[in-house]
Image (cartoon, rainbow, N blue to C red; front, side, top):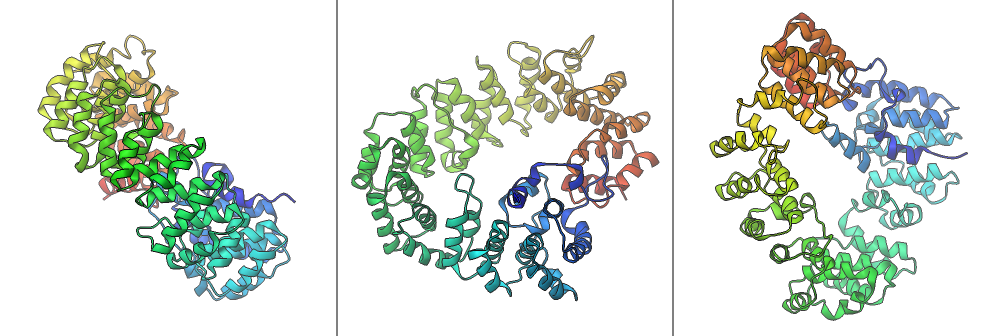
Length: 561
């Protein structure tokens, strides 16, 4: 039998199929919050599953899909989807109360000793999510030798969830069962007790198994390394084969160890190790290492080394190099390097934006000024709003979102009325700064017929929704009812709400029904209905009282008294 549960749990959050939706949930209605509403259903369903000796693989997959947040709260995919859906982080052991149920012990005995592997897997998952370590000896045995791979994997994962003290055996389990192309077990293993991780790592660094050394060296990623660990790490860089040596060099870099020139010179000659070796040099506090790196020709690898080092001195060097001609095709992403947004680097960042000549550098680097409201940062971005490069203008405007300034409000009309300079990112700035004199410009993107520029069509609706007039009703109703673009429909609905158009309540409810059944998608519609008010609108809001989505909760708090 092909077993799919392990991969299914990693992918379940990416799907939104109807069988994964709780009973009674319909499109246009709120999804019940995973932890508070479905726990009671879980208790009932798990008892049925425990009593079903013929529990099938498909039924188990569906069970995990429905109750994934309760059964796998520590998985990276579970945490990611909670964050994406703006749900509050749950407990590490959300099923802990289950241990207090009078049926719990008998149910667990039934699941853990079942001849049906699907039932055993469910039992192992419950132990991990309930924080129940009383069965760890049994789990260790299963994780070593169970013939059913799915059962073996889930027994080991339960031990990882429970932070079992047998770190040596957990290490061997991860090495034997990790998918090294898409690792998930390793992250769970590295959450174990730091002292135990370091003890095991020191033993495994000399293993003949390259995978074991790869895992062991990750345990040296810590604030401070003792002398023995540093010596083991340097020895690994000297002696490991290139296929795994890069992992040791990376840890060397992240720990910012000194005196690396002689150690790394051989690895610099290996193409696959050059970039990470340069990063380690850029991270080093030793002047000799820095001089060695500075003397090299500046290419993309050298630039990346300074940026990836994530130290203030290296970032300053990188910013200085960005003021010069950069290698063709060089790219970087500000959002991956929070240090560039720090107060400590602000002066160097501003200087680089003034001196840099490459539009690609400017358009990306200006994003590091997001949220800045000081005069120097404002001056820079106001100047870039007229830059010859359209992408620079767009991202300069985007970085000004949330800034309210008389100087900005003064220049916006001229920029937006100029087809050669305007960019759709200016629209939100006009809304934020209450520049309401541009309705003629924005209506022109729809009348007499809609513009073919989708970005401006949507942007114009955002503006008209912020400053609607009765003459916009026909346009807004038509878009809300018929436009294929979901964001255009939401903007139109917002405008109808601002106008308080009671005649549009049914239309808004119909538009909401077209949205995927996730509470985050309902916020704009509920806000519009709240503004309009009345029994019909209130009835829709009442249906969302059980929602845990922060946006929905804020709307309900505002309009339901």
